[in-house]
Length: 231
Image (cartoon, rainbow, N blue to C red):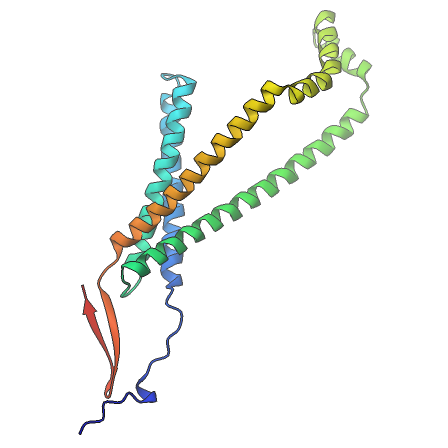
């Protein structure tokens, strides 16, 4: 009678089933494609900016941003599945979600790096401006304006506007209508952002499922390991 028991030496160690190389490849391709599509949208926008209104241009830019994000993540998910060997549909969904998370982590890291650099540059400019302002009084500004040909009436209007600016800012900040409009805008922006985020994740998952190939089942045998392909 044949011994069909599986021996220890016939087993293969099971490690992580996440293909991080494929995930990284899909994420890099998604970011690169999004960059290219963003450049294309910007070029088209600058080309037609003289022929369309600002409102139409802004609406078109928003639509193009959604299309570029969805297309890039769909193709990134497809690339991830193409670079993964033997995954089934559920594993393709998981790989698509992981790739989507990696892309957003990269984007957040790039944004934080850019914001840090921008804040550093603005702080440097503010220090230079503050140092220059300390060395120049109001009379010096007025004298420089007169030498530049600015009328006294314009100088007086500028001085009055500068004196009234803090009070106007406080009034606008405490105006109930402005606060209500700001709250409504923030609510709409939050819901639209959530919808766009979920749509981008769905695009990555669909791309990964579309790109998923045949799966392989690995069996331990007396003579070694056998792989059976399933469509």
